[in-house]
Length: 179
Image (cartoon, rainbow, N blue to C red; front, side, top):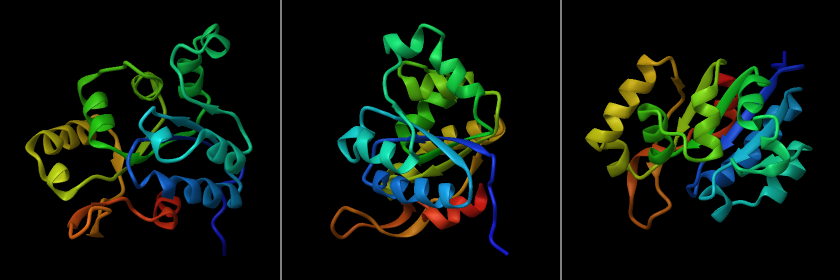
């Protein structure tokens, strides 16, 4: 029997990293199971994939700016955080993890995460050296203690030539199953 997410509202925060391309497939996988998907993209994410692509796949507007006049007239970052059943962060970069672990909210993605009252699922993606760094390990422990659930990262080849290890973002089907 196929898994169904019918009626579920997923807010997907796309962080900046080469694994952002996988977020496009994740949108498709979630939608084909009946979920509605809204996207927030960081500035760094927009260096890897476009809001146009995410919007076409999600069939919804993509949110990018904390100080958007149209959205922030009604405190849009709070609304985005509260109108979701689940927030998925994929890829969850070292930067996004550090921001949430320390309570920093200087962009739309981090403000939404800090305002959330719903569960959060993070799919980390970064170079193995970054994943193993003591600061990232501390942030991981803090976020887990704060109730964030993690899927991955997986071991494998990295985007950088000759690099391999733990740090690959979980595959979209794996993340979808975790949702």
